[in-house]
Length: 187
Image (cartoon, rainbow, N blue to C red; front, side, top):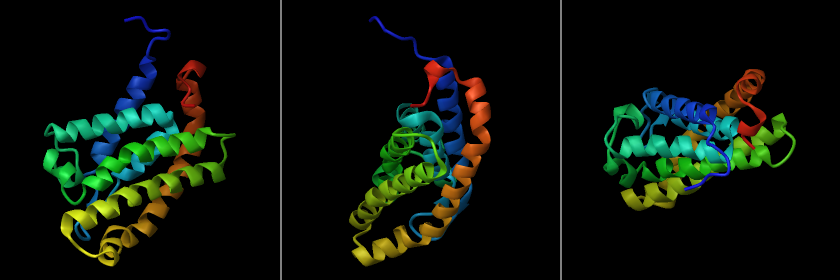
């Protein structure tokens, strides 16, 4: 098989770094119901912002694959296919389109704080849009209850994560440009 362009090693390394950060973030757990508050989604949306849509999705895919095959990378050290099929599965699987969304929106024009906030906000909405219905179906609770336990408690923590991600991205951007060549660009 002939490739037009070699896969940049730097992007593989950064993608692996974000996969590891997602796994570490799953150990920072605040149990508040069927879906805990974790830092994993912080690193998911940051991966889309930092790596772009393609490499952000790749890092999330590897994270989900690690968890599916039994590595303890899900909330509180959970692992296995049962986690992807259980009440939290919608949130976990939504990490893929969330990372893509963050990367796509942030790359769709000139980089700016408002664009990055919009990208991360949209990515968080993607997670809710898949997670809440999945939670409702898996647990048999009402829509109101699903939103009460699967979305509303996360709005403030996720807003804080979005703000922190935008600030961290702005702080890291100069170093990112130093380590990534133009052909490795996220966009």
